[in-house]
Length: 81
Length: 81
Length: 147
Length: 147
Image (cartoon, rainbow over all chains, first blue to last red; front, side):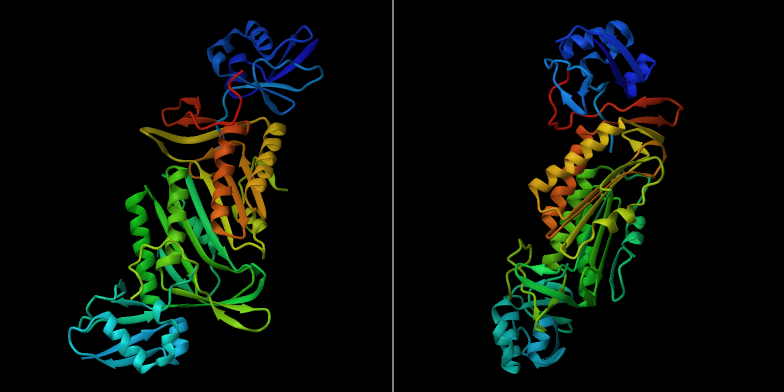
C-alpha cells in the first residue's frame, strides 16, 4: 500500500520536504515504516531515536501496525508553550 | 496610659464604633487589653475567642505587652480574596 | 505601585501588562471573582472592608517573601474594597518569572497567604436580603494564635 | 471556540473574559512569553511550527481531561504559530472554577501537558544569527515511548 507521511519541524528540515510517500506491505509496523522512511531520507537518522509517530492524530508506539487509509505524521518531541 | 483601638468588620459592627479609647496601666498585655475592651463593649464577647490584635501593623500574640504610642487594631479573622 | 486597594473596578489587563518582562517566560494571573453560589446559598453581592494601612503593608510583605522564595521578576496585587456585584473581580494577583513552575508557585502563595494574613473582610449579601460577615474556613495560617 | 492556533497576536484579555462566569470564584490565566535569556544564550525571536489538526485535537483532549479531574467551568487554550518577537505571548491558558485550588491545578495541568503532548515546535533565533530547534528537557510525559 502507498502511504503519505507528513513531516514537521526538524524532521521536515532534515528530509527537505513536508511530506513523503512510501510503499509499504500490508501489516507493517510503525518500526518498519520508520526504517523505510529513513532509507528514503537518510538525514533523518540523525534524530532516529527521538522520532514520534502519530496515526489519525494519536501517538502510536513502535509495535503498532500501520492501518490503511490513515493519516500518518512523523516528528521530533514537541516543544510548544 | 490612654490607647485608641481601631475596630474593623464584625468587631466594629458589634461595638457600634470604628474606634474606642481605653485607659490601661503601663506594661499590660494584649490579653489584659482585650479584657478591658470587652468590659467596655460587651457585645464583643460574642467573638472573643476569635479576635486578632495588631500593633503597628503586625499581628501580636496574647502575651505581648502593649507598647506606648502604638497603633492598635482589633478585628476578627480575615476573609479577603 | 505593586500593591493597591481600590474602590473602583480592577483593570486586570493593566495589572498583567505591568508584570510582563523580557526576562520572563511565564506570567500567572489569578482573579478572585464574586461567585453566585456557596454550597446552597445564593449571593447577590459582596461588601469588602479593610484596614488599609496594614493591608498594604501585609500585601507588600507577601511580595517580599515570594521574592525570597522564588525568582519573581514582577509581582502585583490589587484588591477591591466596598460593594461588588456578582461576577466582579475582587482581587487580582499577577506574577512573572523566568519559568512557569515558579510563577505558579509564587502566584498560589500570594493568594493563599493573602487570605490568611491581609486584614480585609468580606460580607455576604444573600438573596433573602440578609447580610453576614464571612467566617473563613480553617485555612492553613502562619499567624500567631488568636490573642 | 475553546482551543485555537493563531498566526496573529493572542488577545489574552478576551481569552480571560471568555472564561469568567458567575459560578466561578477563581480564574487562573497562564501566559507563556518569549524570554530573552535561556541560561547564557540570548534569544531575539522564536518561530513556532505546528501540526494543526492534531494540535487542535490534543488541546481539546487536554481540556476534556481537565474537566474530568477538576470542576472546571470554562477553559480556553490559544497558541501562536509563526514568528514571535521578544516578550510576545506564545500561549495563553485560562481556566475558571468555583474555588482557587482547582483553578490553579487545572491551569498548571493544561500547560504542563500541552508541553509534552501537543504537536507544536519551537525554533530559537539566537543573537548570533543561528537558529536551532528546541530539544525539550525530559519533562514528565504521558506519551508512549518514542517509536
